[in-house]
Image (cartoon, rainbow, N blue to C red; front, side, top):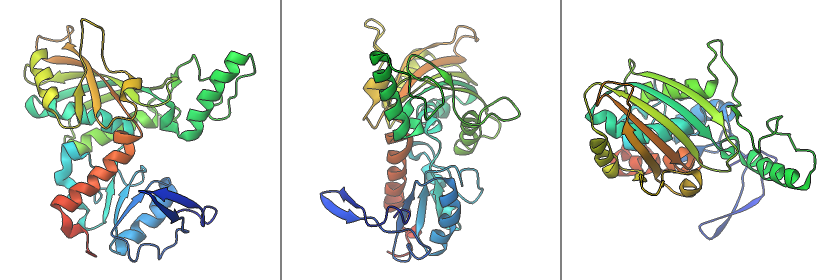
Length: 311
C-alpha cells in the first residue's frame, strides 16, 4: 500500500509480482497485520483506522512510541509487553539506535541492573534513507573527480566529515535522536529511574550504526562475566579479539541480523566491577528497523495469536 502516486507500480516479493495499491481508509478491512513505514503523519492518520478495523499495526515511525496504550517492543527484551496492544492494536517499533543499544545492554541489565547508561553513536547514512546513501556515494565521486561536492540532503560535505545528528535540537541542547534513546530505553526496560544520556553523530559510513556504550552497574561484574553473558545473548554476536584488533565494524555488521559487540572491558574510572565499556555495530536497516518489526509479528503469531482478531 502506498500513495496514489505509486499506485499501479509493480514490485516483486518472494518470486511473485505484486501491484501497489493506493492506501485508503478501507485498505485494512481484510488485513491481519500491517507494517507501517511511511512516516509519522501517515501513521497517525491511518494507524488508528487500521486498529479499529481489527488489523494489528506494527509501526516503524515515532508516532506511537511513547503512547501509553501502544507497547514499544524489542523482542529480545520485552516481548511480554505485546498484549498491551489489545486496546489500540498498535505496536511501536523503537528508534534504530535504541534497538541496537537495548539488544546488547538488556542481558547485562538482567544480571546486574544498570544504574546509568552513557552512549555515543556513530550513525551511518542509511539512517537518513536511500537518498542520503546515494549522496554519500556521489560525494566520494565528486571528491575524486575534483568536482563541487553535492550537498542536497544534509546541506554540507558528508564525505571525510562528522557532524551532529540531523534531527532538531531541543531547548535542553539534546537533539531529538538523543532524546529518543533516553525516553525509549526507560519505557522498553520498564525502568523510569534508569539514567541515560546520549550523543548522536553522523559518520560517513553507508550502512550500519556503531555505538560506544558505558554502563554503571548496581552490583559488581567482571569483564569475563560480561563476555559470557553476551556470548549467550539472543540477537548478539561477540567480536572481541584483542590480539588481532578485531572488534565490531560497520562493514562486518552490514547485512547481518545480529548486533556485533566487543571492546568489552572494565571502566577504570569507576569502582572495580561497577563499570563496563562496550562497542557495538548493528545494521540499521535490518535489526534497527525491518527485522525487529518482523520479529514482533513472529512473536504475535507464536505467543499472542488472540491479537489477530480475523484469523
